Each structure stands twice: as C-alpha cells, then as structure tokens.
Image (cartoon, rainbow, N blue to C red; front, side, top):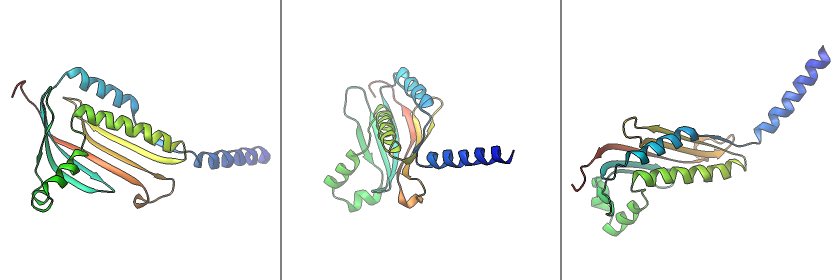
Length: 174
C-alpha cells in the first residue's frame, strides 16, 4: 500500500510541476459572445456614455463623454478640468483618440485583447479578463485586464481597466 501511495504522490508532484509551467487565461468567452451578440441585436445606433480608463502605462484618463450617432463621427467631450487647463488641445485630442469610441469598438478591443492574451498565455503567462455587463443594454460596464508571469506581483504585470457610466440611448436624429 505504501508503494502505491508513494507512486501516486510522486505522479501527482510531477504532474503539478508540469502544470505550473502552463499559462492560464481566465475569461468567460461564452458570456462575452452572448452579450456581444445581444448588443449587436439591439441595433442601438445613437447613444451617449461616459468612459473612464486606467492603464499601467498612462495612468487614469477620466471623464470623457462620447456621443455616438449613426453615420457620423463620435463626438468627445472632455470633462476632466485638469486636462483642459494643463494640456494643449493637440495633446489631449491625441490622448483621447486612443479611446475606443463606440460600444462595438470596445467589444472589438476586448476580442483583440483576448487573442493577444491567448498568445502570451501559450508562452506561460497568466491573464484575467473580467467583465461586468449591463443587463438592460448588454454593453460592458466594467472591464479589467491583467496579465503577467506566474509568481509576479501586481506591479510586475500589465493591466488596464475601463468603466462606462451614464449610458443613455438617444432618439434618432437628436
């Protein structure tokens, strides 16, 4: 009996050590696909929302209100007083051009992030893409992406968060 326990234990240790070298991706792809399809099926073309973004590289970007209307370019309203007072217009216009400007763009960006994360996880990294969805309109209210090497602290990895608030469908032609 001791030999069987020893062999099983040794096998488990070898298996576990092999598993430690594999990357892990925590992402609910089925829910993502379902919510994205529900957003697309809603056919909401005209809407407004406020977007907040934090990236490990850039820091916080707060208070951008984006108005989306069918067949026109999205309109940005900078709501961060410090940016308006301290950054030249060409600077903040470039800064905010980095934003995804429509809900469909945000979904596409999450899909690209998922693909990129899969490639990095295949090289042994660990990633999480966590999303909270709006239950009425099916847009992502909050997205958190974190990736790094196994055993790294939070400071050793990369990540970003995106938060959407004040989402309002607009009547067509407003």
